[in-house]
Length: 121
View (cartoon, rainbow, N blue to C red):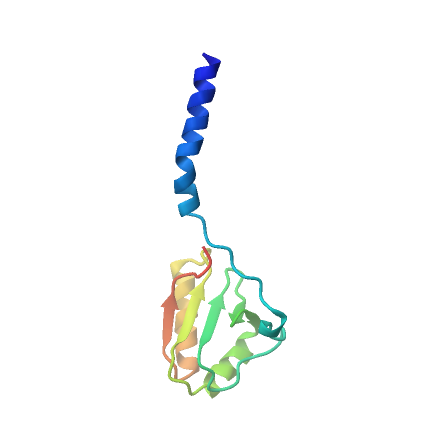
């Protein structure tokens, strides 16, 4: 009887292996030193794309760099690009907090604000 149980367990594991491998995320390449930006580097006015994140703790991030709300407002007011500001929200934000963050961003500059799904699974 133990041999039958062990055989079934091994067969099930082997049969589920293709599904497990198909759902795996491909590995991300490590960033090269030339691809890294300085920690405090902010985009120049007119930059092509701005990605703004509102965390559950209330902090703002601009293109993966922390930024204070007044500095973000000043930067967005100086922007004149055509592409929209992409707002990514933390999964821990409530709908009310998300609406509040979007409502705060919209009058800060001429670019439209687009709510984007989270990029990190």
